[in-house]
Length: 242
Image 1 (cartoon, rainbow, N blue to C red):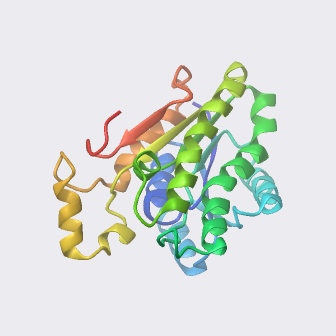
Image 2 (cartoon, helix red, strand yellow):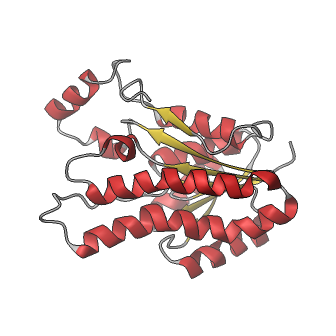
C-alpha cells in the first residue's frame, strides 16, 4: 500500500483520536480535523505525529478549503475520508429549540455531504476512495431526549447506501460504523449508577474501547476491502443486533 492520505473529522479527541492514531500506525498520512480546543489539538499532534487542521465541518465552503489545504500540505489527493465528528444538544422534543435541532443536523449529518462532496471528484478521477461514516447505535434504536441526534445518525445510514450505489463502479466504497457505548470521556462522565445500568444491558459486560472502533475503520479503509460497500458495521458489544 502506498502512503494513502486520510482525513478524520473530529480526529483529535475520543473515538476520532483513536481512529487517527490507528491509521497513522498503519502507514497512512493522517489529517485530523478539529473545530475547537487548539491546545488539545496541538498536544495531540505533538504526541502522536498526526497533522491537525482546523475548520468548521458544518460549513460547506470551509470543508472545500480544508480538503484543499490537506491535499497541498500532505502532498496528494485524499484517499480515505472518515466522517466522525459529532455533537449533542440533548433535550426532550417539547423543549427542543430550532437551534438545538439545526446545530446537530448540520454538524452530524450535513457535514457528511459537505466533506464527501469535497473529496468525491478526486476519488472518481483516481478511481479509488474509502468513505467511512461514523453513525451510532442510537440512530438504529432512537434515544429519549435525542430526536435531533438520532435523526442525524439514522440519516447517515441512508446517505451511506445511496452514495455506495453511486460510486461502486468507480472503485469507491462507502460504509458506516455504528458504535454503541464507548469508553470516551463523555460516556465515562455519566453518573455512576446510570453507567452501571448501561453496562448491565451490554451482553459482553463492559463498555467498548475507542480502539475497537478504530480497528473497524482500518478494515474498511484497506485497499483489499473493495467488496464491502453500503454496509453498516455495528460495534456495540451485542447490545443491538440486526
